Amino acid sequence: MKNRPASLFLAMLLTASAALLSGCKHDADSQPPTGSVAFELKNMVGQQALALDGTAYTTADGETFTVSTFEYYVSNIKLTKSDGTTYAAPNEYHLINTAKPGSSNFTVSNVPAGDYTGVSFVVGVDSTATKGDPLALPGDLNPANNMYWAWNTGHIFLKLEGTVTSTSPNKAFTCHIGGYRQPLSAIVTATPSLNGATLPVRAGQSPKLAVAADVLKIFDGPTKFTVSGLPTTMMPSAASVQVATNYAAGMFSVTQVQPNSK
Amino acid sequence: MVYGLAKNPPDAATFELGRQLFYDARLSSDGTVSCGSCHQVSAAFAHAGQRLSSGVAGRRATRNAPALQNLRWRHSFMADGGVLGLELQTLAPLTSPAEMNTPLAEALAKLNADPAYRRRFAAIYGPGPIDTPQFLRALAQFTAALTSANSRYDKYVRHEVGGVLTAPELRGRALFTAKCSGCHATDLFSDDSFRNNGLDRTFGRDSGRAHITSRAADRGRFRVPSLRNVARTAPYMHDGRFATLPQVLAHYAHGVQPSPTLDPLLRQPDGRLGIPLSRQQQADLVAFLRTLTDTEFLTNPRLAPPRAEPAHPAPLATRN
Image (cartoon, rainbow over the protein chains, first blue to last red):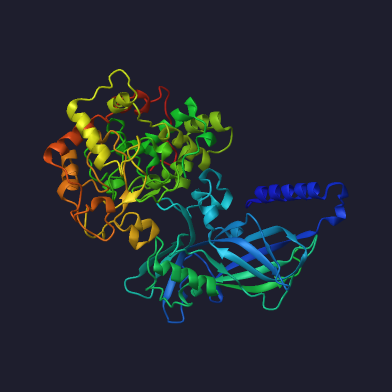
């Protein structure tokens, strides 16, 4: 689903231009082999899987809260080899929506074969894509997904909504993070460690990366927030940048590297 | 970005579909508010006499509904420039809780549940469900077609029949060129910039352009509006605070308030604020501004609400 036609088209284009460039010396063996990498996101609260069914979760400070919405974009995926060379996967925009379990799995195709030791991705959408032709926002970027600010053109990068249940009365919280303009750009990059593991990408081999996304780290990072003290953010603000910095720093962790998921 | 006409070539059927959508109150959450509720053709698509328009359930928007005309040439939309394209502008009032209060996915679901809309969209875009680009393209065909260029002033400039200006109007025009066209530039009567015109000393209620850019230098700056049909678009300013054109002129003559971001064109070399204008000059300027009224535009039946279709229009399935 996600932008596959575009990726496929790009791949065909690249193949075609490579063929043109190599001219009469064209040789099928000269094409570097490619494989794919599967991603599996698991939305968590600490050690528990996140559920939107009213389950109450407890923070280290003893606050309890429930979550009704948790969505975010993963884009601009980069894979790094041990020699420092990087493959930037084009046209990857994935909306991870806790309410849609299928959205947590996606595959990045056409990755040059090699042993990758690092991964990074933008939590959100780059400014070029978010300002792109509104009539050509495909798939997960479609404004109809409700991850979009109509009044301030651009995507919402992450949404967390819920209720603090340890306060009396209970307190609803709404946290919408977005904005690409400096000084309040909330475009952040997560670089979860592979913990020394290697992603072996080969033709016909699809390693899988299992990544946990821990909601608690939204509150607990370089800036400490209580859930009840989390500022209601519906627009770019200093607080929204702090929240984004938090989730870039610690929300994502690699829990498993599977050499081949096929 | 400026409207890409080539990407949405005008045709009669799509224009009519966009017109239908523009005037369809079923797109609001409670079925009471359409785009046309607050953007009326007789007021150059502003809301005549309404300081702030009401949306669903009597909720009030925070700004005055602006005139809609000659939008094709604009780079951004809203008084703060937050919306970056004409097609996208549809989404702001549609989804705003204080206006039509309908998420885009719900609007699409309503359209897809209506056989008449399905037929009309399919006739233009081919079979399949009505999607975001189709909806935005169709509405933009209507809003992009709201062109006002036939006022008496235009006829005067083009040396056409009926293009006669009186002596006070001509004096007003000369004054306008000297004192107003620094911001209300070109025959669009706006340079499409954002400026602080000295309405207030502080901008806690509405910071204008800074609401989008978060820059202190943008506090209190609002889009310079076009003045076409300005005699018909009262009340004035982003919050509709002035009811009449003489009040607006009086503001520029002796009401401008100081603040760090006040536009330099409103600071005279002698330190006075505003634009020095005698009462006679103010009257002449108002006379000139009235020549920008384009009656053909304001009374164009093709831009008015479409007549109800003679067939039995099926109620939308998801109607609230």
